[in-house]
Image (cartoon, rainbow, N blue to C red):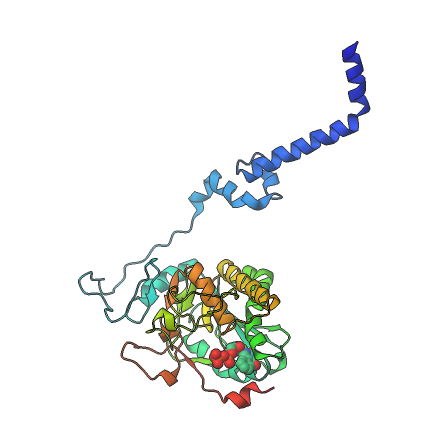
Amino acid sequence: MCADKWINELWKRKHHIFILIILLFVFWLSWHTYSGRMWIPSLSFYCSLNFSDHVRKDGSYLDHLLEIRLPRMNYSQPNIMNPPRTDVLVMTPWFAPIIWDGTFSTDILNQQFKQRDVRVGLTLFAIKKYVVFLQLFLETAEKFFMVGYKVNYYVLTDRPEAVPNVTLKEGRSVVVLKTQSNARWQDISMRRMEMISLFAKKQFIGEVDYIVCVDVDMKFSDHVGVEILSDVFGTLHPGFYKGQRQRFTYERRSESQAYIASDEGDFYYAGGFFGGTVEEVYKLTNHCSHAILTDKANGIEAIWHDESHLNKYLLTHKPTKILSPEYLWDNNMGVPEILKKRRFVAVPKNHNQIRNK
Ligand code: 5GW
Ligand code: MN
């Protein structure tokens, strides 16, 4: 009797029960997805959070990894008792190499990177009058930057018609990306973070492996190759590489997202040269552009704009390589003994003429 009544009740609510069963099934499926024990492989594409995890657990891809095999080569033996540089720091306490002339073999590095067939994107902002720097920049880049590799120069500009036509070597191209300009130069400089993160997501991720982000008021005057490439890298600012952390021009107001206390900091990194894999550059630029927005909402602007935020990011997310000031030099600093090469050098600009309108 009692059971009969129950069954009757249940039958009346059959729709609810049906929905409940569906919900339980979905819950079970997502549980398996998120806990990484994928049951139905085809569904993993839809719930793709753990997709790579799933592939990794399968393990069959291990048999298809690219082998990087160096040929017989001729180069001088690395000598433990005779390090190539003893005048400068070549390694951070978190084991990121600092790239100085004499510490690396271009031949070995090229063997490795060529076999990986890496593609490099270079982002360049030329807003308003700064288009005048493009010609020399691109001409010298063709001579010295990533020679022999596939390179996309991403030129972000409000004046696409003013981008010069420079003859490029095979496998290299200029990609003009139209962007709007800003009234304040501080905003032009800071918006670079936002634009790079947007284009990283929209375009760079499908076209290149690494992104290098630089100032445009520069020229190359010596080799800049794959020795700079790593997951995330920053460059020592030419004005501060010898300095004490207390003297660095970090943002010192604790209300800013870029704040760094006087007893913190490794190096002072330049805003005009950083990069890494597209993934890491996306994380960096996305993080910094949000920090800039938060500051704006709080009515504060970091002292050196995007550079302050870059310095905060690289303090809390340590770079995997650091470029010496050879990679971003300013001849106003003279030429110290430790500087064996000036690879990428600031082009003098008439501040009043170039910056007004
Ligand atoms: C304009 C006025 C003052 C400061 C910067 C600009 C400016 C910068 C501009 O009008 N257009 C432009 O494209 N920029 C981009 O921001 C360039 O890529 C430039 O290399 C970068 C940083 O500005 P710089 O190079 O003037 O900054 P410093 O620190 O090298 O003097
Ligand atoms: Mn500059």
